[in-house]
Length: 185
Image (cartoon, rainbow, N blue to C red):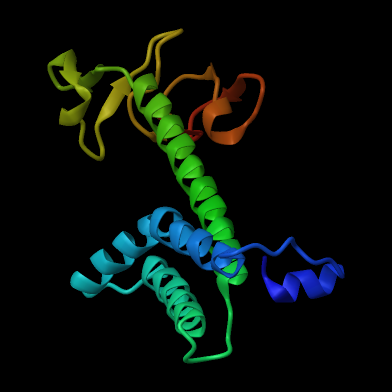
């Protein structure tokens, strides 16, 4: 029902009593319902004095809403109802993609963390002792037995092994590593 869109398409929508309120009603619903995530996020950013993308988007949709409302009430001649709807829709799609990517990244990080063993065999002056990986410090020497998972990133100081680094490097096969080679937990 936007006059500009009808002009572009060279098409006229049917007219009926109240048809001039279709765009304002739908635009208001889209602004309040679809834009609420941006309005809340923008308000939170404003309160915490950390302006960001949510504040920018909330300002854009608020200005479009207020200008369109003022036009509907007869103060201006700037109807932005369809632009408001399009802006909210595109921003919601982008926000959905962003949240989806963040969720997938968190899932991948969780999967990586699950690969870490709970304990490591630390080689010390008294021999090999089993310790929680939280007790490992820079400079510790750790014994990694065949088939075991590497508990901490570092370098190989003795021996050789085939290590499967696909989660980090994407390499599909185990890689030969020897003294001086780098390992990733």
